Image 1 (cartoon, rainbow, N blue to C red):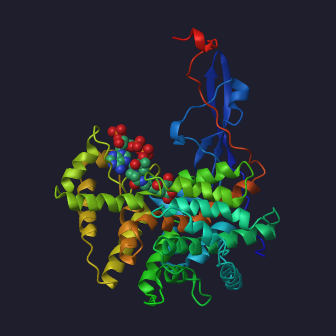
Image 2: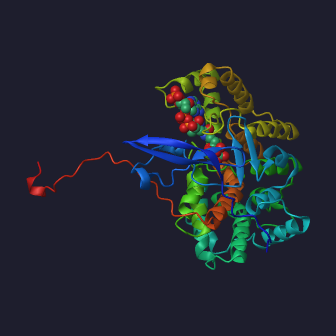
Image 3: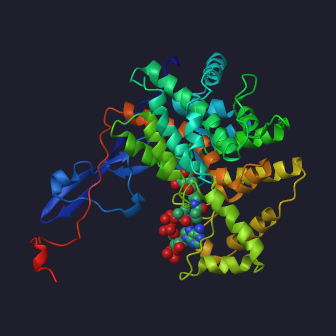
Length: 441
Ligand code: SDX
């Protein structure tokens, strides 16, 4: 049992100032909430009750859904911290297990806690043998993200004993963190008709995954520390990112008090999208298209700027970061270090660097604050490791799992949390009569 876990966030404080709303001869004072980093929000939780009005914010770019103590991002300054610790420091010094523990339980583990956490992860690394039959019945060529989302949801059937006791929740959390690697590697092996490789108790989290992915009876896999380091940093950089699309899906689905597995399965489904976690696969496909087209990267930069062309520069732009995504800077360094250590020359890296340089010098991208995001270089790192392209987003999902779990735990523990149910403004037909079929033209 992890004692003294820091799960429930403090309430935001109230600003001395308020916002004044004048509407139909009435004046309303709306409170302002202030976070620990000085972020401010108008509290509209009673707006409709007091004024009859709702707010409209398609894409929720101006709307806070919760108070959270897990991750702090400053999109203007390119800051990203997990429980207050800069992601740069964690990428430099922490293991992925420590980072997962930090996000989920609110503090870095003691050596004793980390050892116990490692033992629990090892104890739960195997997948129920009956789950293998599920994999074998997916059509050949099924996308691993669709398989992973289905298999995580199926875990509820294989491990039905989930209840709200803190010990059971911790067991479930550890079970999911450990088994997601095994399930991901299994989907890869089975999709190739290869023998499934089981987790080894003597290997740490990242090395175990690599071994399950690439070891084989005919060619034993050699664990390369540089590759393990690249996977460690990749997963730390992806571990959480406050209220992004997939995390908001986990919170929204979780707000119906559905079990953790189903909430996480909804996050995996959302992450699959090419505008979100699927971008790492889309970046490599874009770079391959640039290479194979023979038209040169400048042609594609022009296409990305053309409003009549649906082509977008994948791996560029971000809803929050209006400067360089701090993760992109670290990922670029990991990319150069890994390719040099493995003595790999990847032509896509050259194209990526030309695209980045051209875009950063182009007013269209600068005026719109479009910079490389975490996905721009991560696909090239995964290629160098040997991860197949259709598993790139699965790698993102494994990294993001601790963040999804931490956000789910925080939401269900929050005394103010309630069923998520947004409103709308109806713009359809006003009242119509039903016309019997014989009277219709
Ligand atoms: C992730 O939210 C998170 O935290 C996500 C994530 C995480 O860790 O969870 O960080 C992971 O999803 C990173 C983003 C990965 N997606 C991509 O790389 C796909 C390419 N990027 C774009 O599709 C886009 O930038 C988004 C979706 C990421 C953000 O888009 P927004 O905030 O909705 O911005 P927008 O679409 O309103 O664009 C603003 C302007 C528009 O031009 P104008 O209408 O003002 O003339 O910028 C243009 C857009 O056309 N634009 C781009 C562009 N992204 C935005 N133009 C060309 N190429 C692009 N990539």
